[in-house]
Length: 236
Image (tube, rainbow, N blue to C red; front, side, top):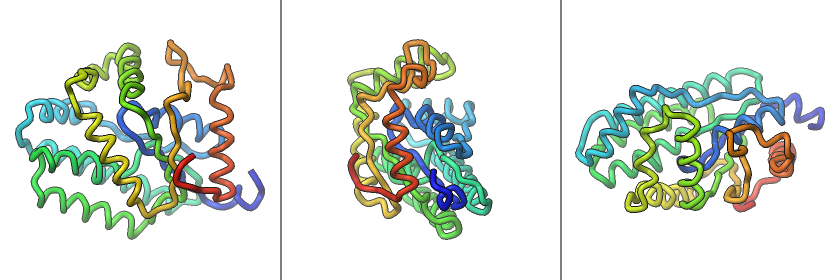
């Protein structure tokens, strides 16, 4: 890291489908760059109720309340870190809740259009204050790899049992989200880069960090180069 960039605030945001590796790679990136990690704020009770509402397949206001909760908390995180002088890594973005998850709920008639518009307005107010992250990294991941990673983390973290329905090959939820992610990334206006992650080893079979075998280091070095030299492109 050169001296000029070490004094400049840089905010890196990760985005990607369920199981893409956002949390793991954001933690590794924050440690590698010596940036502050801003983790996702998760309320397990809200999340469990949310998944239950989606599986019922009928409108329930909890879908709107859940997405509004995530947009508000992520917006508050972005505003707070932008107001400081600290460089940071965000492990998820507001835009994902709006242009991927909420948009999918509207398509399934599980969220009303006026609710969706209110969420968009909340997002826009935060972006007006804090702007976009200095770099958004989209983790592009295939459906088979997503299911493989989800299955592994359910095994390692029983609290994620609510994700088991995503492993059903007849459940198109992940496929639908992947389509929306691609559409969102194409239209996203902030600095951005797509990172193919199918071949990344983000953890060993016991869920431990990959630092010990060094597989992840070339990827982290590429991210450092992009961040420090503003070397962005759409596909990496």
